[in-house]
Length: 212
Image 1 (cartoon, one colour):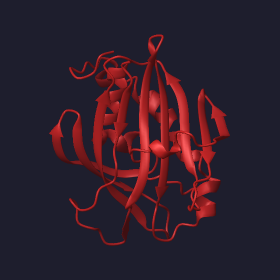
Image 2: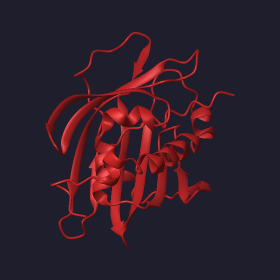
Image 3: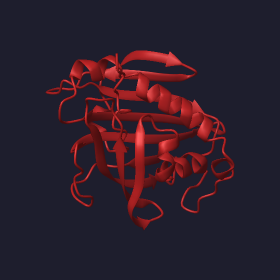
Image 4: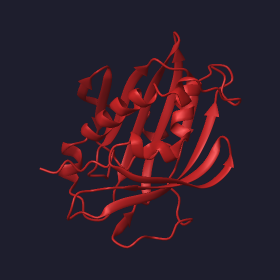
């Protein structure tokens, strides 16, 4: 059976409403824990990923903001392009997610905003999907509703990652199929992310707007 999970249309977007959600562990491998939770008035479950990586905050932020490299590690990502760079911590990007035939690919435009708490040093990256900026593509379904968030917390020389996401992929995509493979996309993405962090351009990263 096709494992069409989109990552889940991996956006890094804001999801404060899931902070008090009751999560159920659905996968635990290589120190990557994945949880799911029902969302009121939605057939699609929310996803949370929790893991600790041997990296600095600058390494993690450098990787996440290097959106054009997303095709190398984000599950099923066909393309990722910066549309507009407002500042080092503020950018818009377009991404297309490849799905198996006969399903249509999905795409989205997200607005990435990076902030750091000066006291705790915790970094939050939000990226709500936005309308416009990139014309619709033929045979590609535009995602108009995606909510998620990356929270990066420094801990004993490492970084704890909490990633939450709820996406309505739109168009024809059976909810039972999306939910059935909810762990696969995030698990493969985070495993690839750990390998990507070892590259010199991230391992040696230093950002003026991030305090490690």
